[in-house]
Length: 406
Image (cartoon, rainbow, N blue to C red; front, side):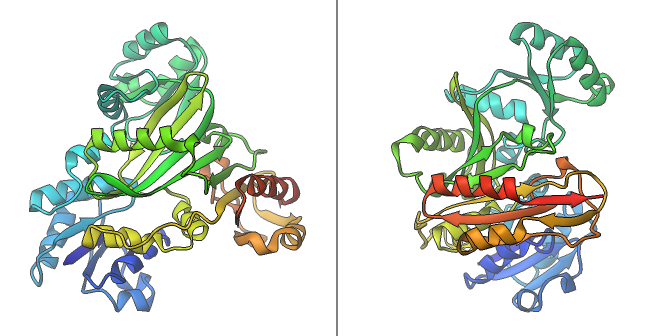
């Protein structure tokens, strides 16, 4: 088996996927935008071959690199785990007749209106939505559905480029900002209220063989817009309970509807007064180090499990469900540079045995904006056998640790 992995060097977490592949005994080659020296020596030395390209989303360059790698050994798999790389890899697979996620599935997992049409046709409940090709499309949708509404790029990930609009004036401003009046297509959706979470799987032949349920506190849009909030992500160790069975059934139905086969998945969902609603799904892992939380909570190597799914189409690992795990993002009190921290010693004294790791950029480090995400500035990751107790502990961390900037 010869597996080619797209972009092993950046971000740093990509190295874990490469490490997992190397652990399977397969021949592993890599295509990167960076030189091989960007990888640690133990990973670099384990590679069968290495190709550097200007851009891994340049499909011609990616295909030519795969062709060169195939000269010594046929390429059996071409894998990408970054959202922006998935479509290019799928197109190259089909061009070179390599097994894996199809371009149709990759497109359905990127194009939000097409995705919603496909899951709705499969009987999966989701918010009212439409494709906006011209301003009048959005105006008609608003008239029919009412406010508030969400507008976002067709291929948006998370809250990236997402706008919430409350009235006609805000809609017109947002349409201009998104460039709809200049021919750009976007997605428009009914705004759902309620709790927001996600359901992640590792699928083999269209069936989840490992799965996880996680929660946002608060929802992503609010978290990425509000400085004073210290947002949290928690993964539960109670997924086997009755409360999560509807989410699991929805996940399987969405995976089937979009034709996802052997791949990680990341599905967002809402639960509120209208019941459980599908939001979106990607045929790739979640971001912001969530797989690290899954590994710590379940005492196993999910990266190796993924690699075995790719190479052997079976997974000889099972999650323990022993711990819940979570992370909390700690925002600087203003933009500028980080000046100091308060409360770090206190939380280490109180919760040290449950702290997985923490990241406190040194004083003098420039801050990143709130919209930069959960790992943009300071953060703490923790685990605990009791999910409710972990939530309380993360709340205390958010109340205690202060990041001062100036």
